[in-house]
Image (tube, rainbow, N blue to C red):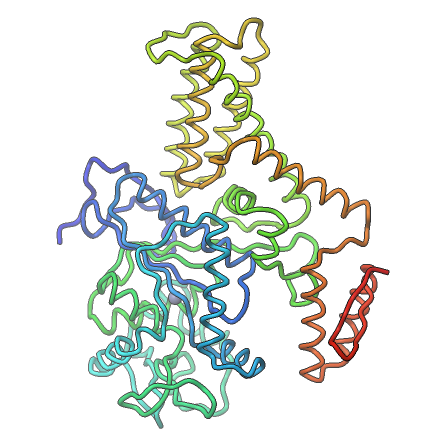
Length: 508
Ligand SMILES: [Zn+2]
């Protein structure tokens, strides 16, 4: 295939973890783009960090499509994993059922968040033959070895190991847990295939019954749907090592072609402003909780208003700021909406004065937004440009005789179009009917205020999560932890009572 970018597609620069630099995007085939994103492991509801991951992928996908690429986008679900098996044993149901159930739940959260459908959504269990075939290719190329039904990748056979994490092998080894039942030749060697254990899902393979290691799934699924070499691969920064480093090793060792991925995109985490995310009450915020309490629109706005490579300090301040900004956006849209209806816009009109320069600003803003997106997906910059346009709009409205003229209607239409097209098509915000969006924001703010003044009003979802966490702790015979959770709930005004029908709760 020839390299290059067709001149008709806007040049895009993106930060590539592989080089550590911002680079100009050049896809393998002009006009076509292949993209893979590592999705969640489905053993429970996803948290807001997973939601940010999916939103970043969705935003990047939308933007590539918008500038004119023919994009093939694969997003996976990890449906075989230790955590899923553990949950299955706890719930006494097969692990397939756990995975199926939580894929459905995640899909609901994605739908509420307005996520576009990827070209392919894949699961590990649907790709076992491809995974086995890939491991066989790795073995036949002398890059792996089998011991007692387990297959390992040999990192010493792959000289490029460490190129994504930019660390010498010795440093990577230093961070490894040393396993006493060592069958590996090198501590960094990793499992491609694990032998079956009783009570775990397993498949027949040339090495006996077993299941795939974690990393091999993404190599197998991306090569099946996108080919041996792809353009863009996205994931959280925690996946750089070992997951993505291992994906590179597996894919390049199997195909003999490099690079497996041209551009590696990694997004940063969400930090809790005051507390560390922990499994106890309200610390881990599930996407479900966020979307129920707030909205998909606020999730998109909050998690995409900060550049994908910067961490988000999540907390009341960040929420409040997002609510204020979103309110300002929809208030302007509501005003523009009214003005556009009353003033009878005329496209042939040559607006002069304040509206004339406002129309020029609309054009300038579109260009600024376009430049922001094309510069490593600078969504924060794009929003900044829209808000300065909104400030100008509000200023013009203050002028005498500004409203209810054809020029005003034209300006109003242009503002709506900048919001809906420029923000809506890439970030997926700003497209709601303004009165509905404003009512929603008011509801959230009223509830937040009531919670702040009421002091003890924690949400029902938080209470139920607490009761569940306590039940889990008791089941694990961690009675100290169970008691701690009961006290935490009590401190927040919730009394719980264990009865024959289970645990009930009431406010103090
Ligand atoms: Zn992956």
